[in-house]
View: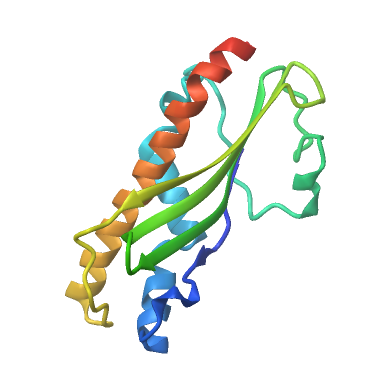
Length: 169
């Protein structure tokens, strides 16, 4: 199961116009995140069996905070992966980056969580353009960099989880 949170463009974007912020927000919306998940092959990224079925859901409601499964599935092998938050960060000292918060839960064969791991991943984007306007060239360049950084964040998170996942199974 994979879910997502809407992209967040924080107030750190001081000096940006509403139009520029709207363009950035639209570059990694939930639909685009799902497309990125599909291109990455989450089975391989997390080291799951090739026959693992992946189901994508709309953003999950408050049940996520519970320790129970978020679907009616009773599959013996059941995992949940969630993108909790995505932020474009522009900091005067650290530069520009995408900061993503992820959570992975493994229920193994039971109803309760056997492994839960949350982490934040930061991917620098030094080549990100200074100005994002609504022209197609500017938007395409920014979209490419944001999508690359998001994919890198997922891969780094999956690589951190794999060893713990192998130990739990």
